Length: 124
Image 1 (tube, one colour):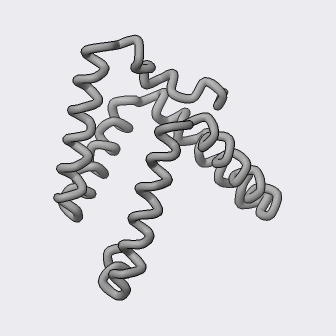
Image 2 (cartoon, rainbow, N blue to C red):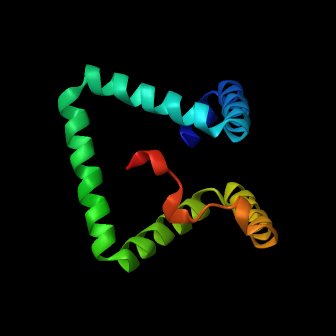
């Protein structure tokens, strides 16, 4: 994405603005966004049934691996996060600040924060 942004910075800024707008919409109505995302996924699966099945199989396999060895998955996620931070330190600092803010909110009012393993009750 960085290369595309260098090639066309104006388009990149427009995309970033649309993404921020979409994030705000989803923060305001997460159920609506979840339903839209599911509908897009279902449409994709209708158009590409074999790729969809392959993708679902990989996801299930990955979930089983992480259930069997959660520490390994945690370490891999951490490594990906650190790599992302090396590539984009400014964005990384923004994400870390948001995470700290969210942690403080959850500490102040735990009832407003769902447990991480219960993020998507409709996904089961």
